[in-house]
Length: 237
Image 1 (cartoon, rainbow, N blue to C red):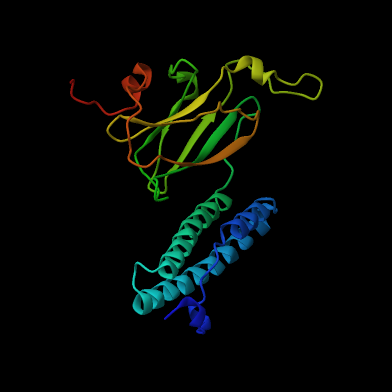
Image 2: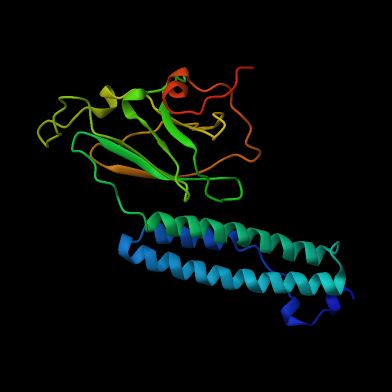
């Protein structure tokens, strides 16, 4: 049947909802924490319902026109987009439900979750910080991701460092080298290196969601310092 003759409203070609949902996500992030949890939960429910409808539309198009028809492909693309967004909303829901770690007055914390390219959490990955020369910064420690992908790097501050005051705020940017987040998989292969430097927030915690590149391609050899203390031993090549 030609597209112009299709009068079935349940088979109307769906529109890509990505821009709208991204705006809703941004709005929820600006909400207060207590309200954000409810906003995100509702958003997830709405998008799951939308996804179910898109899946039904895709199945109807496939049965009526075939998988190669442009209308079927449009419906499938829309369903794929919402599937991706539902996963991102789930990640956001975990974020707003994660309590802030306690941070020393002269220190800082970096925490968050690590996901694979399909936005599923990855466990037993090593998270650590390196400088611009890819040297492991042992002073800040390392962390292993748990089954939910969660990690926490909590730096108490340099020995003897005084807590900042309004009269004499600590010069964190001068005392801290450029730091880049690196992640190694359970085979001791680096699979992620942040493109921009991490900026610690004195006496505060920063949360990051990290989605690993598809394919799990190694970025080369890990820094010797982290291999010696945290990564699994691998046979010499």
